[in-house]
Length: 282
Image (tube, rainbow, N blue to C red; front, top):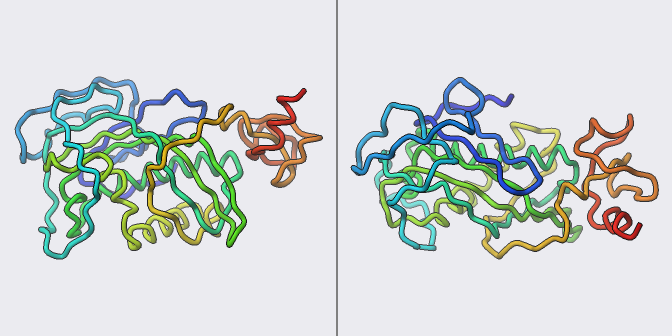
């Protein structure tokens, strides 16, 4: 298991979604590595600007709380004029699901099934830690959000070779968090960890440090965009096929869930679009 750095407050767990890809495992802020996905949701106090309760953290699968941020779409850049001390509140938003999210990884092809799952896991971890770790940041949104829990599922991927290898990922994100300022929108909370160049560099370095073999060639990422999701005719996991290399030789292959299901010397790759088309035509 990947060690989790100390956090401000225990976070909550993710609920598996309807897609075939496994959801991002939630990372426990305490010594236990993973959250219990099926535990009860704790009641949310109505008072604002109070320290969070010391009981069990609410689950991501619990009901949405009545107090929700208003729909302010713009994110808030880091400012030296904002108070740096993180604030705590027991006002809870979510869990809720945002779809149509998009990010581009520059410098690498994310083609192995295992690497796709690793990206889901680590990106969920990074998004949680952004809000849950103690810091002296002057970021207004970061200091007004705490006890975040998030889960990510990839919906589709595409690849480009010009000007450098890149992977564009469409995904959905389930999120729950406590907030102080009710005017901070959910879109702002989701985009903020990747809004500035500094934050994006931190994310790239985080991926490289956690899994250098998988993400060693990653150069940079885009910020998160909300451009709408494609509507693939098949699930991404239905495009996983065995091969000695990528692209897969579709004339001599078999479907797989991960590399363990493939013959010795082969890996499990997404075959978009060729092998899937061949299977559909048979």
